[in-house]
Image (cartoon, rainbow, N blue to C red; front, side):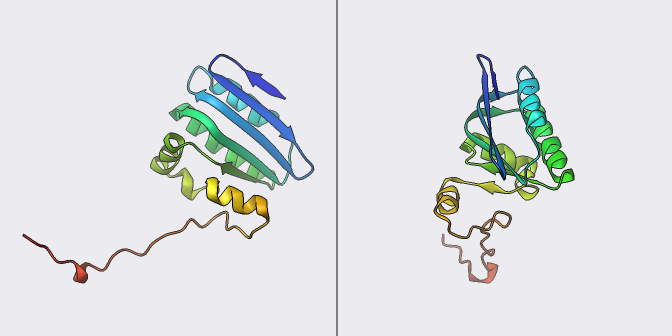
Length: 139
């Protein structure tokens, strides 16, 4: 399956357990229909991997579609996993809070997952806040 225009390229690969959706280009108001169409037409599988390494732009329309796709996949008993988002897209996912809603595998974690190493898809690495009692102001 493939959706292609001059601003977006969406390719869907279907496996036994995983549907992989690769999106490149821009997802905005003009291209969101092709993005949505590819996500909605993907067959039900336990995992839908959304590979975003080629995505340059994710607009508010794209964020809404991504959230709707996440809910749709969960309702069917599956999991939507975002893989390798570009820095711009990763920033959008953090700003909108979607990084708390769905698993996001960044490049190093993708390599670990492919090697078979155990990878926690849900809990990102969090550092404890610095103790304020240890701060010293210098003039």
